[in-house]
Image 1 (cartoon, rainbow, N blue to C red):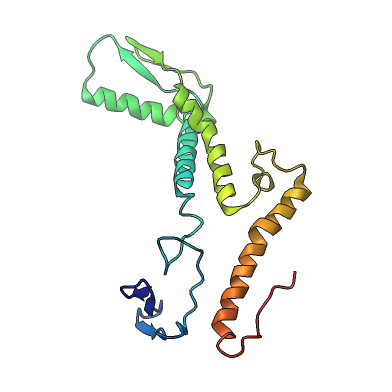
Image 2 (cartoon, one colour; image 1 turned 90 degrees about the horizontal axis):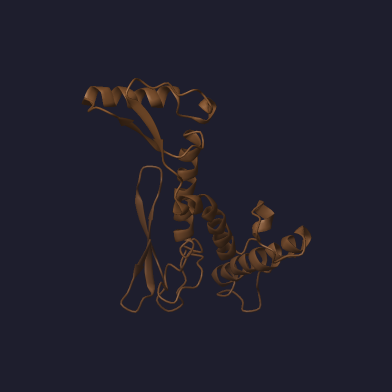
Length: 212
């Protein structure tokens, strides 16, 4: 992790080695800003020394997708049947309620038990509950979350099998966009960072460049 001065410049890096957990401090030259540590980062207007990860603006979409996936998995475990309620004509004890819940979980919950006949005791009726519109949207909105993450990372969604994005005419044009919009800028960032770190203090005319 970089150690910052009051002007927002890194003055040293603290490194914790995985074996043994020992720490080492690597200094930064205050005049040339050269260090034995190379930190490659994207531009950030507020985080000068750490940069802004592409995943940061996509974090909300990632969290939303994960929660939608959990909801979809739970929906499948319930045989894709909306939740419901067992209505009793007489009060039930805590033991009876617990036994009914356990019976439902063991014998009727899960995609492999879909369609099994539901056997209830006397005085019990099943009251099905419909799927709310917001619950339906939770099953479909995760595809939009996937597309948002792809947009942030500049990866054409169609290459990942995510439908609904008609930006590209065919897969070949999508592959070309992936190379030009995602791969080439990343390679240029790596090359320029390595050039400034390894060569510029030796010879201004030396530089590293990807061979496309």
